[in-house]
Amino acid sequence: MSDLPRPGGAGGSSSDGAAGRTFLVTGGNTGIGHATAVALARDGGRVYITSRSAAAGETAVSAIKAAAGAETVWPLPLDLASLASVRSCAAAFLERDEPLHVLVNNAGVGGQRGQTEDGFEQHFGVNHLGHYALTSLLLERLKASGPGARIVNVSSEAHYDAPGVDFDALRRRTRSFTGMREYAVSKLCNVLFTQELARRFTGLGVTSYALHPGVVASDIWRRVPWPARAVIKRRMLTVDQGAVTSVYCATSGAVPAESGLFYDKCQVREPSPVATPELAGQLWTHSAEWTGLGLSPVIAARGGPRRAAARKARPGFPTGPRSSPDARPLR
Image (cartoon, rainbow, N blue to C red; front, side, top):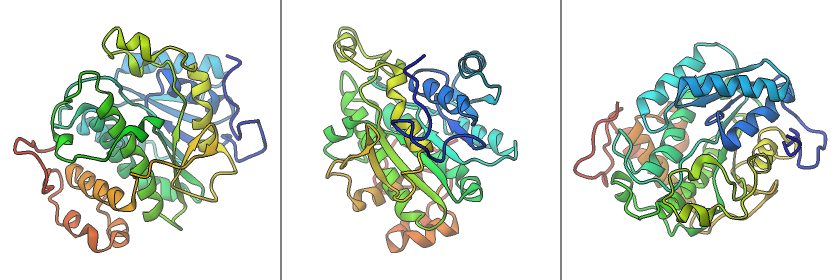
């Protein structure tokens, strides 16, 4: 596994590193998340990984420990397509009563069609809303673990293909045949979420970063219909190569000076011009309404007048003005 990144910097430069810090990596049982967890644990980090299957999580933990030569790795069950599961995962971590220095929102789906159990388009529900909810539930622990706490959102350059966010479509099943149109929107949401986190938490000891891992031949594409899957996986990076920028954003001493930026190949890259503060604010408001989260006094105070509707939302119910008629209560 010689391609695995070294925490701290793209070229192995001195930095904060992972030693003595606690990380939570979603989707750490496979692909980029697995490679990220190995790199962090190998450098002395305490690493929690999530997976939908408890058995897969246990198997992955054993493999990560062996590859990293470290014992400080633990599994947590998490199905991002279920907000109830997200709440259970957050509660399970918080019960361990230890700090959380870095949350790596890595897990995701691509090329799928369907709807989550809470009634959201599959890519949006898993890639953004589940991570929004998990982040919201862990924010107080992140703030208490700072200064220097970080939120790393694995996005994609596919976000450049999204023309915007149709909030009505987010409450419907996937419409496109390959799901790639919806995937691009979900990755734009990752960028918008990162930017809004930076605006709302300036000076509170928590920074946020979005990144493009490269076009990686990971398990995220496993449900793309054949032969489209074969076409899009040509000339892709390995998962170890794809983890480099994630590890960089999670550990480098060079990134905390600025928050809310988009990284590619361990370098800052200008995100899509569609990623505006106005759209980010709208996404936050809808996400808060649909999950009943993100409405703490600190967050609300920083939100200002444009968050008035969110503050009136009934926790646990999708009360957004653009919700579809068949919207279901969140569990």
